[in-house]
Amino acid sequence: MWLLDNSSAGVPAVIHLQTVTIQDGEQSDYVLDVEGRLVQIGETLYLRYQEMNEEEDSPATVTLKILPNGDVQLTRNGDNRSRLFFSDGKRVQAQYKTPYGLLAIDTVTPSLKLQFNDTPFGGSVSIDYFLYAGEELLSEHKIRLQFTV
Image (cartoon, rainbow, N blue to C red; front, side, top):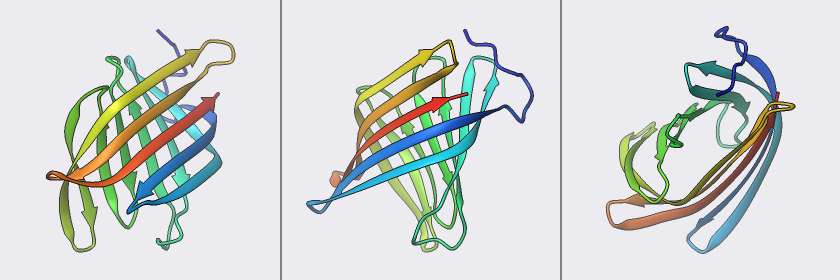
């Protein structure tokens, strides 16, 4: 297992993020290169960074929590808040908080892959998932994130 600086501030990380979203037959691509922080608490990794969104006034804080069992939790705190859970091959309940109230959603994750490197320490997270409200498919997503400390 990794041993990073155990301080709560973590270590600086360079992050490259690519996302693809397909909604109502329309595809949107997003690329972000940003500096963030990587914190290790026990065997859990937390990768945190700021993300600007055209629809929001201020930057959102995004936290990717990588659990020892390989599951991933993505939390986004901004004008709209979401907490999504990804477990390879599973359907998991999640929440999306909008100014209009709380929306119950599910993530279905057909593919979740994690890979880590030792020198320099870094890794990649690859998540393909579907977002559902009940039985209705809302959107399809692909996340490709790479980080290096």
